[in-house]
Length: 332
Ligand SMILES: O=C(O)[C@@H](CO)OP(=O)(O)O
Image (cartoon, rainbow, N blue to C red; front, side, top):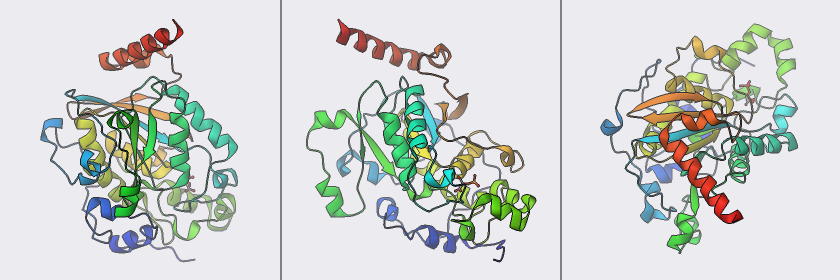
């Protein structure tokens, strides 16, 4: 196994895009175009009002998307969840872009994560195209008090889009669009995929394997470094998710240890050195508030009734009050 230190963006695009899910059709651009250059240290460079309009046609209400009403608020909640334990996490195998499901423990973690965020508004869900992230998002939403129905959008072909159309405006209002994007997939782990992590550390040395797993610049053999993963995940976040937050839509992202590390690096403005110590647990939701073009980290809600979370902003408190009032009305 040879360590690859460089890899063209074109090559990454073509490897990651082997999946039948064709995000390119949503984005109206080929997957193999060289990715945009992103600075190593990401900056939030624009205020909400300055954020440029991007190609959002796949999200358009006219394009078979359950409608998310555009709100006037300049504040929105952003929830990040790493998927629950997968069958390969349990076996301690490098997983990357291999599409394995959750274990029973992972199912439980996703449900617990859902309880913690059950009083936080969610208007839109983004997941990777991998089943462990999608299972986590769906299971978490079974716990939400608002009881809206998450619906996975199928825009991969005209037929898929037409055949999944929802004809009732009222039903659409009671739905949450779920957008699956390969750009949010786990880092592509190259020749480590399927290998046992402990055995790999014994073979190549703990230090080498730690660098492959946690460094910013060093890619695993024939795989993506965190930097490469950031180039597609952060670009997707900036182009597709940030504009939704800027419009006041509350967003949940269910993704992976490394795709989320790269997004957190961007949100928290971490250096390439600082990100090496960032490690995410499975099934732990993290809350950010997006306001006036800035992301404010609010940590992980400990429980659904945790007063502190709802004191973060007036809007969150009001949302929770409405849910409480609705539950009370049902009981009366
Ligand atoms: O195997 C993987 O895909 C990831 C996440 O489980 O592992 P690591 O913690 O090494 O980044």
